[in-house]
Amino acid sequence: MSAVRFRLLAAAATVPLLIGALGACGYGSQAKKDTAADIAPKGAKTDGLDEVKLGFFGNTTHATPLVGIQKGLFQKELGGTAVKSSVFNAGPAEIEALNSGAIDIGWIGPSPAINGYVKSHGKSLKIISGSASGGVSLVVNPKKIKSLDDLKGKTIATPQLGNTQDVALLNYLAEKGYKVDATTGRGDVTVQRTENKVTPTAFRQGSIDAAWVPEPTASKLVAEGGKTLLDEKKLWKDGKFVITNVIVSQKFLKEHPKAVEAVLRGSVKTNDWIRSHPAEAKKALNDKLADPTISGKSLPGEVIDPAFKNVDLTDDPLAATLQEEADHAVKAGLLKKPDLKGIYDLTLLNKVLRSEGKQPVDDAGLGSK
Image (cartoon, rainbow, N blue to C red; front, side, top):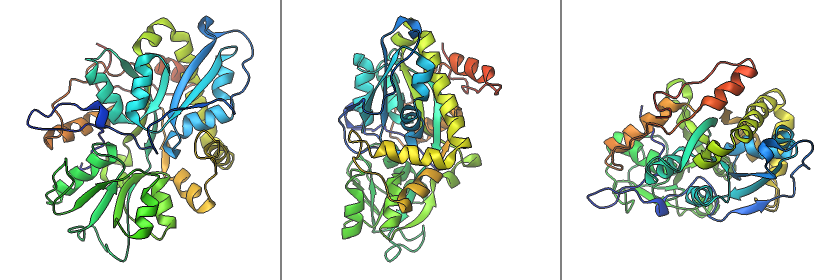
């Protein structure tokens, strides 16, 4: 297995965790309140709460919350408790919001989830469900890069220094025998950290030769004339690896388990609805992406079609891949070996899955202490 998906960055000889340097797969760092598409609450309040605050990114890898909120599926499960959502474009900002109580539950990539957990000594959050797998590709300028053996001397963009795709690329290059300084990005291959929103322009102008990026950025590059040289799914057993988890504040989980369970029911039912209504779900996703709080415009068919198709929804958090990612990061010298025991609490998810006639999922030995 050669893919690593971590937002954790090493610095100096001691290799400390740097939460401030770690970005997500998104398009910036500020959260925006998203209330325009919220469905009105109706019925009894869940756990006596006036509202539950959800956070997520405006990426197709976050299709579950985007579609679920757009279609009112979370609101239906929460009854008279209002859904309030905030759109984030970077992992550290969402973790900070969770820690401060600005959000209660969030959809986020594996690296910031782990970083937040380790940084708080296991006290800040729990991963309570999976949400998506896949949706990451190496897209190249076919005039400059013909094969995976033709990367030397080229410039490859990743979303941010130390982010999930950044470390995945660094690990991949190392296994191919290329030497690259993780901090500077300089070496046999130049790794250039570029915000996803800027990457298509940089690609078009020729200042980068390729990019290891999530959807929909990958499909945007293909629409600009790029070629998908490697789908990261090919690097993982059965083509599965975690790209989006559901996390919750441990305080909120302890105080409001019924609300957490309701959100998880909404997540499971949204994933089922998306699978059974793909065309309608794709439209709902694109409509949500066009919300002014996200991008303000929908994606063209040549982008939304492959971007939607390339992401696999899953309630399973694929916990074994999370551990494997951590092992790879440690082996590469990018991370001190973290103690991930207790990062998962899948109790409520498995309760929901059983009630829906589904098989429970496994935490790979990383469940609650």
